[in-house]
Length: 342
Image (cartoon, rainbow, N blue to C red):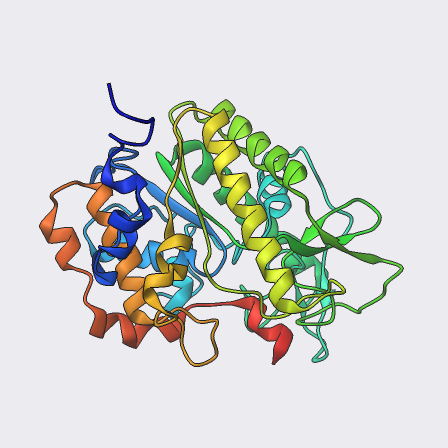
């Protein structure tokens, strides 16, 4: 019998052995055996801008990155990294409402936003059509086609990797429709009587994600979900506090949400991309000069760990993560949030 309950614990549970004694480049806090991916299963991605890195590396490593709705133009940089043309899905409410809209359970009041140039955009994916649309009717027709493809995606994927990004967001005061960007940033008119700021709490977000998982399993019983938390800090906060404090709340809350949902639902897993990038051992090296964008080395470290656990011993997949080529592509990630502080 051990002298105390901690005496015989494995090295991964000791800060001294698992963190201090591990070279920074070798740090891997992923729990072994959590998930495996086959090269034939359909793997979809969604979430914040960091999710686009996952999509690209899956494709380049020979896995089946599932695209139900192709990009507007072939080879259109980061747009190739969306499984459907929904753009970034920053909040949990956006995620569950996308599912509900795709299956006819929710029809938002908002239909189109007008831009300063007179063109129109979809309020729920305002940057997915750079040229905009000629009329609100054209927006509606494109949205109907898009949601049909999203239905197909959810009904036929095998695994969804979803990156939790933000707790803060904007909603229509009339029906609670969650928006990826505040009105006035890309289209629409800012009116505080029409739109309200929301900083979601843990209970609300756990409810959103579990409802999404249950809905997904209702149309696709075999679907698995891998949750991760974006390490990218907030660009701006609308909360009345320092952005550093706001960011700490956001990431802590999202991390708790991921843990609670993974514990509450089978075949929902957590992958620690947030921990890898923000670990004290990196001494900030995985953030670029703006202290927000994750460096190519940071992305490569995250994806090296992800692929090593997705397919244990698959050296070909791990070797595909070339940091130099990653450096050429990091700037191609579409990150709507950066527009807030442009």
